[in-house]
Each structure stands twice: as C-alpha cells, then as structure tokens.
Length: 140
Image (cartoon, rainbow, N blue to C red):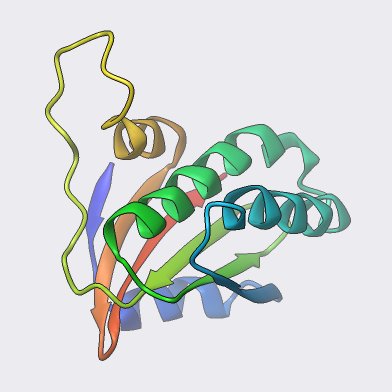
C-alpha cells in the first residue's frame, strides 16, 4: 500500500526503532548485492531472519530503482528496526517521485519493482528532501 507521508512522519515511525544502520554506496550496479549482503548481516543480528527474503527483495528493488532513475553519484540506505518491524529507506539526489509502472506485458523484463515492493511491504512511500528524495518501505 502506497502511503503519502512527510519526512517527519517517517522520523516519528522510525525513532521508536532502537536498531539502526546507515550505508552510503557508489551509484554502481554492484551496490545492489553489496547492500543486500550488508543488510542480511544486520537483520540476522536483529533477529529478523524471518523477514530476510522479502526484505532483501524490497531493498534490491529500491536500490535498483535509485540507480536506474536517479542518476546520482551515491545511494544512501538506512535500516531501522524494533526487532518486530523493519523500515528500509533509500535516498538519492533525484527529486522525481516514484511511480508504479502500468505494465500488462507478462514478458516485460522491467517495470515491476514497485509492484513487488507494494506486494511485500505493509506500507511504502516516498518523500522529498532538500537534495532529492527518500523511498521507504516497512515490513512486519
């Protein structure tokens, strides 16, 4: 479910989550597996192995979208958790808000990233920041 919210709303949601980490990666396609590997180690330590498959896919889709559409030099990733829920946030320098693609072609190789995020996340959305945007998803 896409949720419209502000940076303050996400801040309020995640500040109650005591576990947190941040990673900045170069805007290279190798950032996707690097982010996934880094995150899986954290999720395991936070006792969230049960979310690892879905969360790994959501993280991969958000980072991939950032790399493909934002044309920035870096991608920022923030993870927050209260050991029950997991918030994934990916920031990039492009102010354009994400849009779910309308694709009806079963053989299309791209365009389904946010459809996947919407299917796996309890909530997801995006908000603008002074130097771009942050796209976020919450899994429980």
